[in-house]
Length: 174
Image (cartoon, one colour):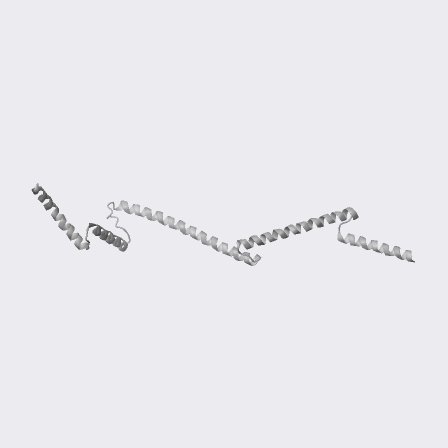
């Protein structure tokens, strides 16, 4: 058995030497550190070259096509997002323009101020409607009692009555 162990050690010995050489070359203390160094070097190489080497992945042109498809899909998503951002920017510009107009027109640009101005306008409208209803009722009463509801007709009628009363008073006094 001892021979067998020596044979295994002899078979592993060249690999051990290669591993030790690799660790020394990468200045790594163990296999984990060596793997980390290799990954770091690979990332740096990809960064310098502009991306991963399609042939290094093993499938060559197939991986390149997949990467191109992914790039196109990603580019399409970026275009879509750019469109969304442009739309949002336009909406924001319109919102601020509307806000400035509200400030100029009614002196309010905050929602609470606009709501307060609207509520005040509604109260004013209700008061004006009540006054209008009273005016219509008074006009109807004048029409019913005097047969006339126009102010000029009523003033004319009042002047005629005044003239008749003055004339009758002069005749009685004389």
